[in-house]
Length: 177
Image (cartoon, rainbow, N blue to C red):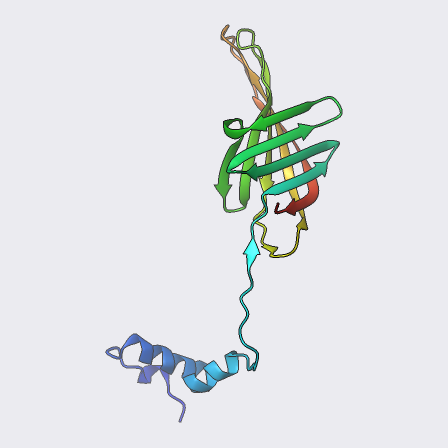
């Protein structure tokens, strides 16, 4: 006999309601439904252990980025054809988001008196699970160069859009060392 939803009493415990609903929807008893969903294996369960990479090497658009966390200190090397800059510790801003960890550094800043442009590099680090024993795994992500106009101490008003963005893809490897 198939139970109907109207047969589910409102004073039954939740477990009984769920069992009755599963039986009604699937036509199977709860026990047979669980048996159907469980894989039958004679092997013992094996734990799969992963580690998080602590070094990323990324390239794209003529840019090379090496980001690492060693001894709990962040390091970042940024190289282009015309620029080579090293950042460490508090010079590197990190923000954990739903889409990865946003890394930001200031590539160049203007004379504070006169003003000019500040250039920031930001890129997303995806969450990566690296199997124990594997040394590296390929990754791809996006970078953003933000150029922001600043007025300096003279305080001349700046009109219009203050930030300009250049985005480009990055590819490389994530590794644990």
